[in-house]
Image (cartoon, rainbow, N blue to C red; front, side, top):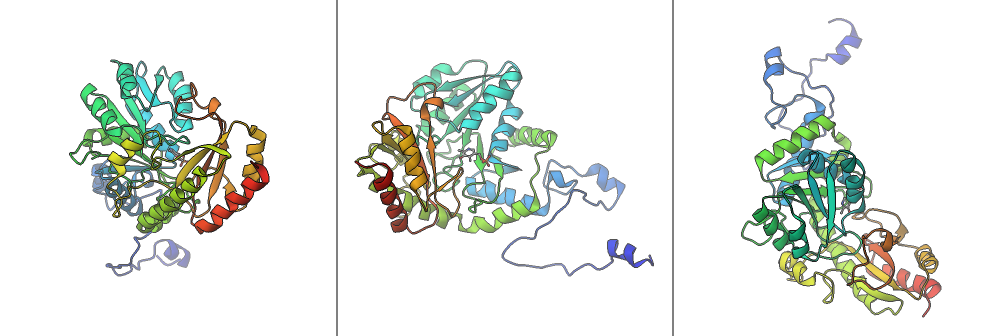
Length: 404
Ligand SMILES: *Cc1c(COP(=O)(O)O)cnc(C)c1O
């Protein structure tokens, strides 16, 4: 080996082992190098016992998987390129032609779109159930039901379902339950032990894009289980679909994870303060946040999330919605959102910037829920700005666009 350019590629230097620092190393690879053909033939990509190909894991992704599994109270995690990819990984691993999936009517919209698009095209049917009626869910489970999605809280409308009863029902009927755990984030409750007695869901899908990333700058998802056979099914589908994640994105999430508890609580407290303030504003017909006494599912929220805060106040993510009184036309609600200065117009949540999105609820539900006032819904997600500044921003936009 004399050519210095060859030396650059096959350089003999190895740094000393034993480097230790607060953050794990960032390993990047498509190719993984084996010491022998025997190693190449015998290494098992399905376990974390070694490395075979970048798509099947690196030290960086293994470490993140283990930390997400620990955060959520599970045993195994697979990482995928987005929260929506986590939902798709679950559906495609567990459903076949002729099966049916049940989805709450207040589910994250793209979960419904996947069922109506690809799943329907594959001959997999779906039905939407009332998230606030365990009896409705029970009545819809048939021999063909192979997966029940649960979501706490419901996207946009913030209802907290009776998760314990829903998980128990799925257990009793032998149907796999999968929770979209993005809102709880592994902080508000343990999805694998909802009642403190070990009753939980089978699968947790989590958009790491939100709280674990915390920056509004990474897309990633995770699918976590406690059951080895279920994990293997998810892992095989994950491999066949090629759902790998990039090392730099994994690094960003690893860097943000140690502060997830602090960020979650800060945004929780800010959201509750502003939700309470909004309850006193005449332009808003209803404020939707599970910690408010009259919120749909408030008792179920207390039961599952009540113990998660040291001060006994329960835990909730930094989100709430308002329904603007129906006397204001939708265009005026748009003007209110446009008038906000600190709350930026944008999707997602869990990052440093507070965000606002107006929603046309009528187009998102099979029917208008009886527990919701009529009017245009606006969802706020709290960033990390001072609450007084955010409240002043809401007040000035209300005065400009939604005068009493
Ligand atoms: C954001 C979100 C997702 C999807 O996450 P992406 O990474 O944006 O694909 C799924 N479920 C819920 C509840 C979400 O809020």
